[in-house]
Length: 283
Image (cartoon, rainbow, N blue to C red; front, side, top):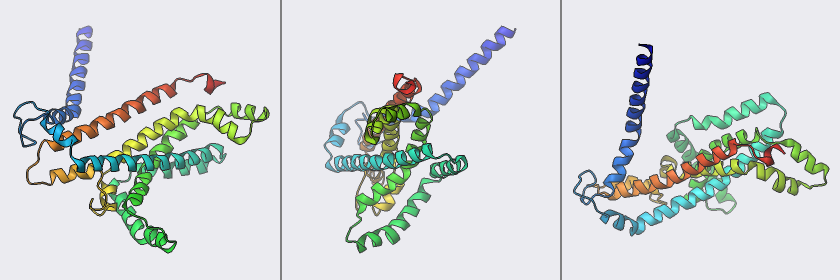
C-alpha cells in the first residue's frame, strides 16, 4: 500500500510537471510553427511554407531594426559590464559590511521596479537634464545614445549581481603572491584577476545583451515611439498594429526567440563552468 502511494505521488508529480511545461512552452512552439504558415493571415493555418521567411529575411526595414538592436545591445553591454566590474571591485575591496550590504540592495532594487516606470523616469531625465546639459557643451544626445544609456541602466543590475557572486570565489592570495613576486598592477589584473573573473564577465555579458535585446519600453519612450530609431521589438510591435497581421510577425518573433535561446544556453553553460573550480581559482 505504501509502495502504491509513493508511485501514485510520483506519477502525479510527473503529470503536474508535464502540465506546467505545456503551459510554458506550447505558446512558444505554436509561434514557431505558425511562422511556417502558407496563409496570408498570422492566425490561420493553411499549410507548410517558407514563403514568409523569405519575405521577412529580405525585408530591409526588419534588417535595419535587427542591426539597431544588435548595435544598442553591444554598446549597452560594454558599458553595463564595465560599470558593474568597477562596482564589484569596489565592493570586494571595501571592508565595511553594512555599506556593502546597503549598496548591493540598492544595485539590485531596479531589478524589481516595473520596467515602464524606469522607462518614463529615463525619458524625463533625458529630456530635462541630460540633453540640455549635453547641448551646453556642444554634444547632441540623439536617440541612439539615449537608448544605449537606458539599456545600460536596465542591464547594470544584472551584471553587478553576476560579478559580485563571482568575486565571492575570487582567490585574493594569488593577487598578493603576484605582487610579492614583483608583478605590477596591470600584470596582476591581466594574469591573475582577469582569468578568474572571465566566466563571470562572459555570463554578465550574455545577461546584459539579452536584457537589451528584449527591451521594448525604454526603446519606445526614448526613441519617440519608435519614429526616431526602431529596434527589433518596436518593429514587431508595429507589425501587430497593422490592419491584418501576416505570419511575418511570427517569423520575426521566432528569430528573436532563437537569438535569446542562444544567449540563454551560453549563459547557462558559463554558469555551470564557473561552478566547477579549476586550478587558476584554487592556486
